[in-house]
Structures are given as C-alpha cells and as structure tokens.
Length: 170
Image (tube, rainbow, N blue to C red; front, side):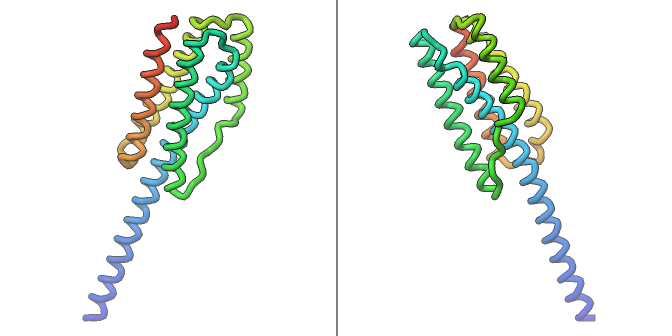
C-alpha cells in the first residue's frame, strides 16, 4: 500500500509540475506575442520619424520629432530587454510593411512637407499604433504578466502624448 501511495504522490507532483510548466509556457507565449507586437509598433514609429526628420526645415517642429524619436528609442530598448528576459530575440520590423511605409512617407513628403501635413501623417500613424496595441492587449491581457501589459500601456500613453504634441501643428 505504501508503494502505491508513494507512486501516486510522485505522479501527482509530476502532473502539478507539468501543469505549472504548461501555464508558464502559455504565459510566456502570450507575453512574447504582446511584446513583439508593441516592439514592432514602436519600431515602426521610430522608422517613420527617421524617414521624416531629415526633411524638416522648421527647427522647433524638428525638435519635437527628435524628442518623439528618443521616446520611441527608449521604449524599444525596454521592450527588447523584456523580450530578452524571456530568452527570445526581438523581431525586426524590417518587413515589407516597413519598406512600404517608408516609400509612402517619401512620396507624401515630395508633394507636401509642411509641418501641418507631417503632423497629420504622424497622428494617423499614432492612431494606427493605438488601435493595434489595444486590440492585441484586449486579446491577451488575461494571459500576460503585469510587466508586458504595463509596457503596452506605457506605449499607449506615449502614442497619445505624441498625438497631443502634434495637434499644435495641424
């Protein structure tokens, strides 16, 4: 009888350990999905600003955009660290979407490089980022840790702050 009880206890521990491992993997998967999404969003924000900044002639406006770029850069660093802590490597945003975005920005700037037009373009980009992040956050929030959801919320706040800064130039 003692052998059966000991065996049941060992099996029970193994099952509990497996369940905890599965829960951790699911949590990590959800965190990684969310972190990769917000990383891509922040990277696209950086990329759009890189494409625009050198074309700006208005110095105060250029300084606003440089500050926004630095904010995105700091945010991508934080997100990259969080992804690395999950023993993964951040995915690059060097995709066809990023390339198409750069081309579209360059074409739009060729026709109109006024601060109002650029602010309008960037606000639309920020809004797309907000929508993307909110969708992914709503899908995954129950399966993610506080750390990844807080980073997503921080990026949402950054996107909104940038919209508010850019509205002055419309």
